Amino acid sequence: LKVFALIASIMMGALLIYSTADMPSWGDPDSPASRHVSPRYIEKSMEETEVPNLVTSVLADYRGYDTLGETTVIFSAGMAVILLLRRRRRDDS
Amino acid sequence: MIVEYRSVIVATICRVLAPFLQIYSLYVIMHGHSSPGGGFQGGVIMGASFILLVIALGREEVLQRMSERANDIFASLGVFIYAAIGLTCLLLGANYLDYSILPFPGASPEKARYLGMLGIEIGVGIAVMAIMVSIFLNLLGSENPSEEADGIHRQ
Image (tube, rainbow over all chains, first blue to last red; front, top):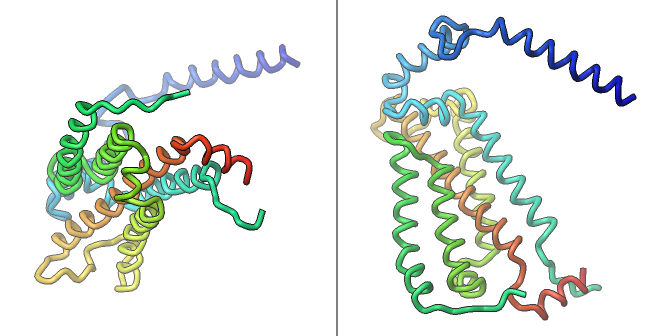
């Protein structure tokens, strides 16, 4: 079974390495990722939000829902730590 | 066993340093619109100032000024501010988290988006600060060994 797992992971790795050949080169301005949304943000962010920092306007406005999720993740982590580690004072035990 | 060691130099320097850290964290939050920074970074710096005080002065002395209960309320309040601003936009007839509809007096829709972003950054900052301090305090446990043993026994 170990041999089978090894063969499977090698095949998967080979497939992934093979598929990287089709990826656009690093920082390619003609890649699909930088042809549609990015120019729109770069050109319109200042006049639409009046925020000079592009990162902030993307983080908090265009991708605001994502940032809400990030904040909720941090909140959940804190609540999990409180639930697991906080010493509670119980009088009934 | 970690024994308590009080150094006047360390305690004084941390006491002096903490307000500057807190002012700087407020600057990072408020100035995130035009320079690197924002709610997460500013919140972490603010949390670090409290953690520094806990390390230097001891847990109890800091908890007298900012109780764990208040800290929990801050953690929930930060996420609540964020979600409530989004929900206000929804109630006013726009999409969720579309700040351009927020009724700031004398503000264009663009300025309203600017101010709405500032609001959620403040919410993120409060939440991150409280969660950092809360995780640290809970990992730290109690300073008093007898109280610690008592707590384990009772659980």
